[in-house]
Amino acid sequence: YKKRLPFLQQSREGYYSFVNENFRFIFLNGNEISTYISNNKAAIKLANDYIDTLKTKGGINAVEWNGGISVRQLDWLKSQLDEASGKNEKVFILCHFPVVPDNVHNLLNYKDVLTILEKYRNIIAWFNGHNHSGNYGNFNMIHFVTFKGMVETESGNSFSVVEVYKNKLWIRGAGREKSQILAY
Image (cartoon, rainbow, N blue to C red; front, side, top):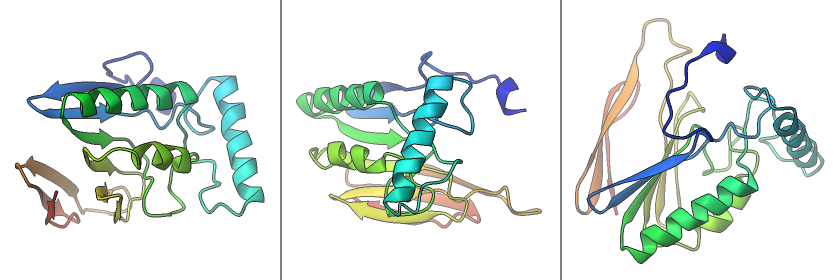
C-alpha cells in the first residue's frame, strides 16, 4: 500500500525548509535513493550500488530498508546551512533516517552527511525515526535524537512534543518515549 500513500509535501523532491523567527527547520528526503520505497529505476540502482559497496566494506547499514540522499539534495543541504549560518539562524534537521550513532538503521550515505554537518556550529539537533527502539548520539555538539516507534507494540504508544527554549530543548515524551532535556 506504500505506493498509494498521499504524501503531502512542500516540494516535489520531498525536501524543503522554512524559517520561524531565528530557527531554520530543514526536512530531508532520506528515501530519495531507495530500493524499498522508490519507483525510480535510477534511484533503485543507485541504492543497490550503495548497498553493494557498503557490504564489501563491512557496513552494518547495508540493508535494503535504508535509504540515501542524492548529491543534488546534499548540495541543497549545504546551501541551506550556509544561508542559515550567514543569517545567524539556529538549525533543526529532520529526516526519517538516523546518521548518528553508527547503527544498522543509518542512511546509506550517512558519512557524506556527517562530512557536511561537521563544518557548521549552528545546528542544534537532528530528529529522526526509523529505528523503532529509539537512540541518541552527539556529534560535533549536535544532538541526534531517534524517536521510538510504536509499530512493534500491541497497545503501546510513543510520541513527543519538543519545546524549544533559548538554551535547551525539552522533549516531553509519552508512552514509550522518555522525556529529556538537552542543552545547546
